[in-house]
Image: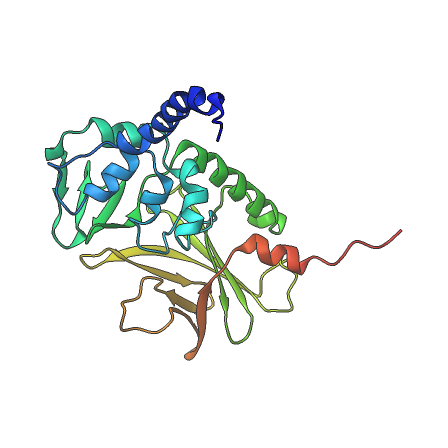
Length: 275
């Protein structure tokens, strides 16, 4: 049987290419001196591996409204480059091992929570906002506020949007930071309302952070004696958060399911007439 000489002449080259292609997998950065709790996260970022990073996260990961939350590892892999930018990578790579600190029940962190919080080896909160996310956030905020009735727009910033899972009512919370403390506004719309028009109810109030976990409590009122309360941070034992509105002693509760205002604006607008 004759042997093709070209096979043997190409074999060393093939082995070389294979070796070069596998170098990346062999040259992974390792941080053995880091605390076990934070090592998977730090190594995933240093090795610039979206997949490893995504597997080191507890979902969902909340992003500042109206940025969408990251629901699972598949979304995180796609979102990774928008969130994990050069300054964050630099902080993780250049900080000494001793810079990682455990802060009681909150878990492990770097630079006092400037980037994220880790518990049981996984990130459960990302406090850092990248430059790309900031640009996206500004764009979505401007787009959302511009969709409101004109008198409701100036100097207001979107904070949250929820829907009542029973009635279909839509509530939004906005804030103004030109006073101390900041002013918050609750605007409510029935399922039939034009979302670009006047809301059915509009109250003003404050945000209080209570307890060791800093749980959020929004409290609103108007000069007619109507009040409303909303606490979005519930414990595992509690049911869905609720908005409770009290009109002259008659209270009504709305189950508050997180939503995105712009999604409802699209549904709310009538179709364009055909030519």
